Image 1 (cartoon, rainbow, N blue to C red):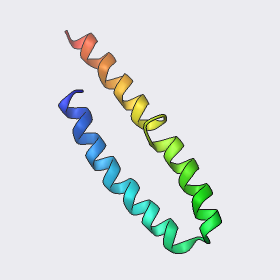
Image 2: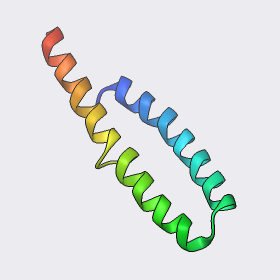
Image 3: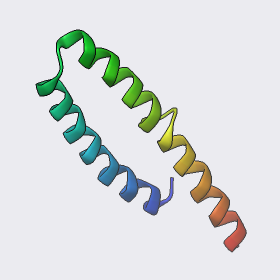
Image 4: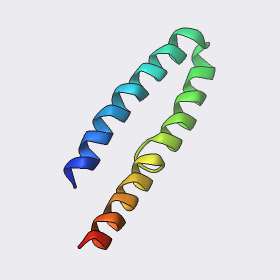
Amino acid sequence: MPALYQMILELLNARKNRVLLVAQSSLPESQFKAFRQIFLDEFGKSGLEKDLERIIAEKQRKDR
């Protein structure tokens, strides 16, 4: 994976962890579990991370 992608993931993961921590401290457990699942679906490996990887790969192919 490109270095740029890894750097973006590190920044994204730090922020995801912080959002999840705030949600955990603010929501009842059942609501937090539902929020966490939706949040990670959208911003995790099958959501935003996958989209970023695709976009960066396409950009690199075009630049060659």
